[in-house]
Length: 195
Image: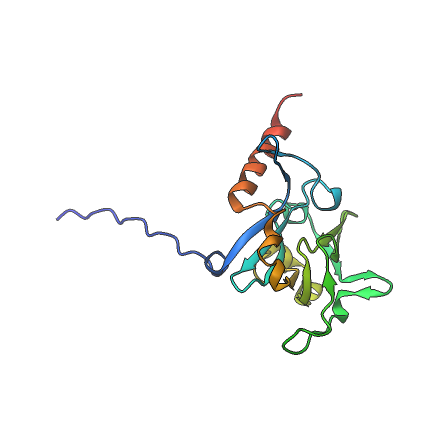
């Protein structure tokens, strides 16, 4: 009796892939030419890509994109700080009630935290979306390694709630998963091309 080879079972999508849409802040779409142009990313820093996980209820989870230098091999996180300036700490954000009173309002370029690496590099992580800061992930303060081990789940940076009337427009300056993958291929080709 001959046995048939077992058919490969389809991979079950993760919780993040099932319930969230991934958006990326990485490059800018050039409307006149209809193509991507490789420009500096968030706040002019090259390759410091951010990933925004948007739920259907419009809540956005801010994480690091897979290509962010902090997630590359050899980087060790020394510390993470939500202290933005002497008068502003994201840890002081206290949200209460149905209308989310007390939440800090963020713009697209508002800094959420700073990541300090053992090699002396410092990375400022920005909000990338306008809205109210619902929470920051205090777990990464005590165990920074989860930011690198599980960036899309337990190692998230913060949760932001856009205004209802802006919830559709917040993704206008962001890239889809497919567009982000195209940008990554172009980056790799640009760095490996002979000069």
